[in-house]
Length: 72
Image (tube, rainbow, N blue to C red; front, side):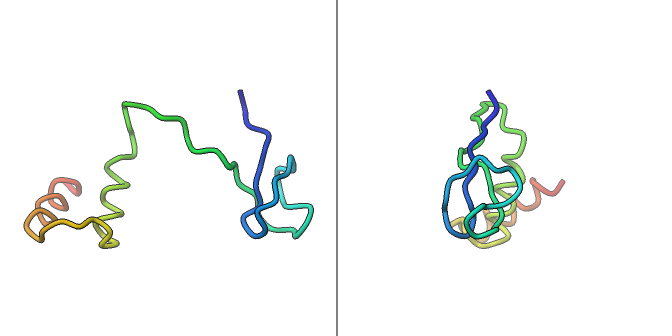
């Protein structure tokens, strides 16, 4: 089933409009998380992004090894 509900990024108002918020004119997004899949196609990219942003609390040796493995 396709989601019809959208939520405004600016004011948080829920709407059925697909292009912009009727209240403030802001951008709208689907408020639901993506469907879970055990075959996670984008796990590599999420981990790499967290590594590069410094949001994974790991040691430097482990970080270097992960970066080497993920970028190869």
